Amino acid sequence: MSNTFPLKKILILVTLLAVPGFLYYLLQDKGRNRYRPLEIFGPKQVASTFHTKRGKKIPDTIYHVISDFKLTDQSGNVVSFPADSNRISVFNFFFTRCGTCLPFNRQMERIAAEYADNKMLRFYSITVDPDYDQPEVLGKYSGSFRLPEGKWRFLTGNKELIYGLARNSFLVDVLADRRSPGNIIHSTLFILVDAQKRIRGYYDPASKEQTDKLTDEIKVLIAEELRKVVRSENI
View 1 (cartoon, rainbow, N blue to C red):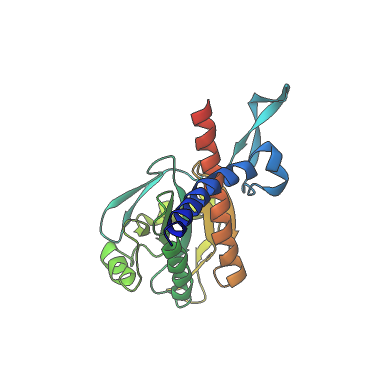
View 2 (view 1 turned 60 degrees about the vertical axis):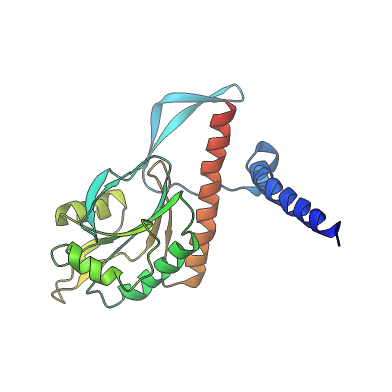
């Protein structure tokens, strides 16, 4: 019995040390066939600058990015995006009087809980009915969810700003429903945004397959960011 306990501790320690190294291997040239970076969504432009790869000059690409913005959360605090350059974000659009939004935000709750302890990730739900969904309304609505501290914020603000962000930055639809006063037609997709403010995925919260895909692709994006950290430390 005296030799078993140290052996177990050694095996646990080796496993903890091996996992980051194995992850790094998967992201290197030797393991590149096993690692597929996520797509980058939105319009792209060829830049006038170049980078060199294996001695060959390759034009840089200018990708679509989410515009910087400031909105107000359910506690009345001003929230700036981006808060810093090292965070991955998941967004969705909703409104509290929406009959179908609640189950979708339950899916957001589930995913946010899964990453509650991960400091690289944050979640935002932006109302498309900001005239009604003031901070106090959002505060009451958010009270029905288990919110990881500082991890998931419900946002409101200027209606024109929010609609402009939805259409021009997040590239999703939002408009008043003329056939049903008080209703707002809007995208319910979850939107994954990387630390460079680029859109890396859209996911239908009504589909378990899609929400499972989101949780998997969050892991891929976290791995991308860790790879950048390793590279910067080796420069």
